[in-house]
Length: 490
Image 1 (cartoon, rainbow, N blue to C red):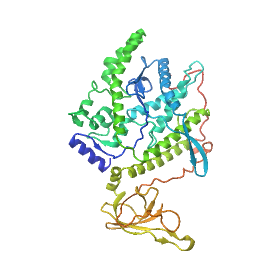
Image 2: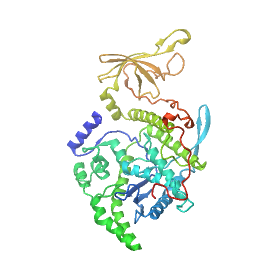
Image 3: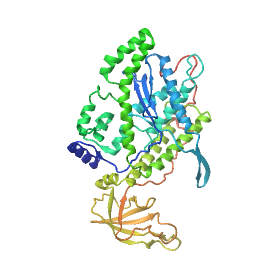
Image 4: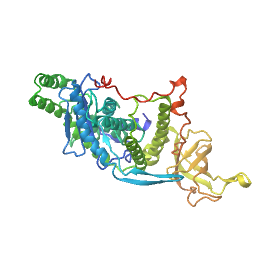
């Protein structure tokens, strides 16, 4: 936790209401997001009990498994969920745009992408488990499932994996998105309770956030947002209802389970749309659009893979695939951190407190300074900034600035309150700087050791050349056998 976030939490505790951690929204919000609230049976990691989903706050759709230990009922639930989710995804593949690329062929990209909003990180993990449990199924043979089930599994896996990508908005968790923008007077663990978190941020009239959070701890008023239900509800309401269905298999018994589950999911459904409204009230940060373009490109690429008949995602990455994924995630995290800081002065303030960034006034500038001789001569302006911020950076550190995106400077020296910088990138072409590219005396500037520039991908061997020290080449995909079900959901 940063010093600024700790201070905000103390203020929230003192004032009884949440404090802003951001001035803009760092999560893209779709015009038509789909909210998904999954619920699983207690003690059964991969046994779905119910789900409430939809794109209309006034008309949620409730899917229920009256006996979660029944394999056929579980796959019938998966087919129902596919019936709801797949048309939503397919509708967003119809409209495309042509993207021009420098030095490469243009390509088609979907103009929009699905956004699946789940309550918390536990729900996101359960969605990934649902994907793994269904994407390897077969539509033929003795253990056949509906043809939409394996396709649903592949999309759920894609969305869950992309949801862990820094800055992605394809499958955000409501608690994480809210905690990114507000600090409460409770612990980070307590912030995982959606009702408590929203109570701090948006308490009812006449009630403080702290009081609303205490009220949220009562499961009779605000049931857990899943994926696990309240133990008291499980023992007193759900277990008898499931036993009654198991004994009779009647519509009345199924309706009893359905109504019991509805009572647990409807409060969370209302909270989810309140969370969407709270986020939508914040202005979008400039970096949101670019990150959403990357999400749309990933969505388009995966849809093309499905159309070409690519096999399901493997249960585990090979050595090369895992290393490549890790490198992409690290680059994305560095880029996301830089974009958030450049977009938001309140986020940048956290880096100023740690000495990784500073703000000050230009005391002197030499925009015509050059280095070298002859053909090797280069334009290298010097800028001296007077700042009262603590600067804990070594000479030679590369710095970026939110005022001039794409420009880079190199820290030359620190002399008391004066920091000397050499601008090395982003001044224009030729031996004269573009007007306005070099800050002038008296201008207020900010520099940070946060860079959002392109980095080439890691040099890795092809998967088929993976050395034996790293497990050798990954095995080729083999469809599941017709003779017995998969290890998941069997």
